[in-house]
Length: 266
View 1: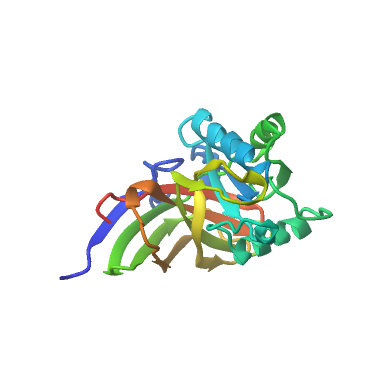
View 2 (view 1 turned 60 degrees about the vertical axis):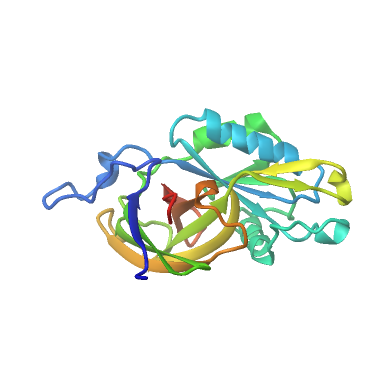
């Protein structure tokens, strides 16, 4: 059987966007609508405060309006030694959080922590501080990227991207990254600080890959393309998952965000 090929445009913050036509203004940031703000939550099922932060982030995404906020939840692994091993934790997410500690000139790691657009942070349970950080975040146009999906084999999802950035690259060279996340995850916690609780986790990052690298100074009309392959896990269901593509410069500041739903039959 030939591999299935599926295509879609991002729905949130760029669902109807298309690449600029010839003769269009160079600075698409002047005419394109503002895209989403990226909120990254660093948490752990082993941390007593993380369930509340999960709920705060989920409410923010739900109540902020169509496409205004995109949440990604990164489960770190440094709580695993405290009696409960988080099934979604990864050392790679701890490394990502450490990079933010350095970029934001913080003193230490902690959970739950929220990083907003790579520019500000707060404790994940502080709803008012989080809302203010989202309001203060610069709003860049969402990239105008098209994605096609293939399943080269039953355990792999391939995503191929092409389109324009719609924001000028500033603050150093940038990476175009894409996260595959899963929502609706329920875990009965048998040990640790959340012992006896049934934990609900949404927007949990399962994979994070680099689509392309972009030089500093690249214009808003810069075309980028690339493909990534995501190894899939047991129980993968497209209806529970989505993709978030975002552009991040050398200072870890986010310059644009686009969300994609996965087709049900991918």
